[in-house]
Length: 142
Image (cartoon, rainbow, N blue to C red; front, top):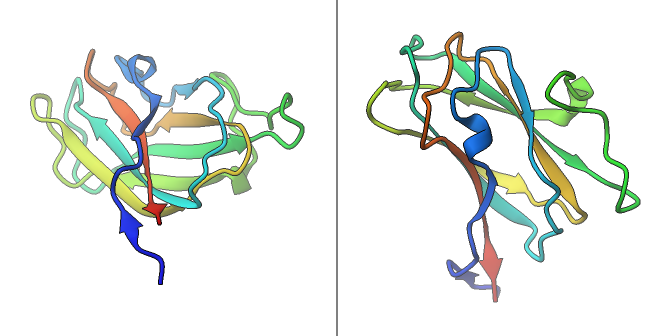
């Protein structure tokens, strides 16, 4: 039987790129190496310049995976990727201008090839000026 091991390293996919990100604005992270693990959890940590309504989808996220190691699917600071690639929606439950809201999506398939994280702010408000991150914590198994 495979045992779960919590020692996998947390990967920061986006950080300062999210600071002061205006509503309906997109950001594309740097290329990340493929992961040995097959699954993990997303954590989006946000505060807002102005509080959006609870229950608002505050971010759309896609993982853009390269097939050949060089070329990535379309998706940038000015272009949404293919609709099918936008797989993860983060819904705010307790938004704040002063306390970090941590939004989790568990059980995300980990890319087996190099990839980039793409995020679009859909909060209806800008994110705050500091401390915002999108992280991925792989499930490590023995």
